[in-house]
Amino acid sequence: MAADRHDRDGRAYASALAPVVALLFDPGQRPGADTIVALSQARGRFAVAHRDAGAGQVELRCDGLGFDCHGLAPTQALRMETALAHLALPDDFQVTEHDLITLAPGQALAGARQLLPVVRILGGLVIALGALPGLRAVAWLPARLAMPPAWFGQAVGAWLNGGPFPALALTGLDRVDTGFASRGLGFFTGQEFHWAGHGGALQESDARGAVRLTDWLVAHGRIDTACEVELAGFGTVRVAPDGPDRLQVHRL
Image (cartoon, rainbow, N blue to C red; front, side, top):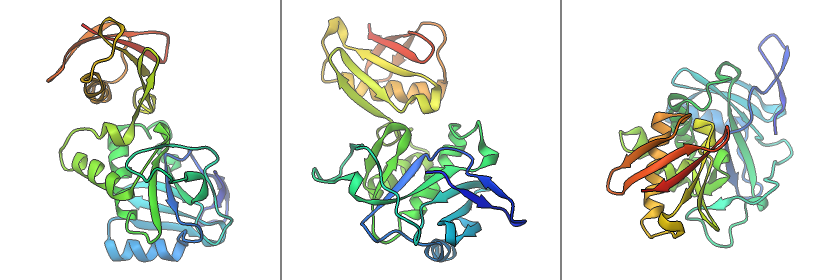
């Protein structure tokens, strides 16, 4: 999805990083650069620092950080090539049938896009863009997860206002034969986890425990040696590395 753009001196440079967010629109409803500029002026939450309407891209500034936005009209519409997991969307919602624009951290954020202060600012920017007409879904790409803009706004907005990390919006859990597997946690910590139920059988509370562990891991970062973690309202789990990018989790 990346494309070249030009700075004010006309020098071409590539979009810095892979997209983190995709905004999905009804076909033909993607905004153009003028719409993004108008929204920035009306809301004041972000600014347009650079625009290349012909290439369908703008650079957005929010709380001092730059983010590249690609896929704006009137360029050829981008589409998701594969399905995403759905959260609170209609059963018949097809992400591959919607036009999209993408957001990626700018070049200055290379190596820092997964840091929570950057993610928080990006989350606030996405909430501000939620007012765009025709917007049907927000896709958090590291977790390959799509959700309604209002749902994203509520979950991430609560976090920005001092609430818990929005694990259900920014990560996912997949049911596998032997338990749960996290999806998208590696974006924040470099590691995904496999959660095995007590005695090999999952209980109803295990999903809640896995969400609380996600919150703990995002706050504490990478785990390089086995440890026991007390999860409030759930109990104790043992977390142990299993290779460079995977954790094994067992309830004690």
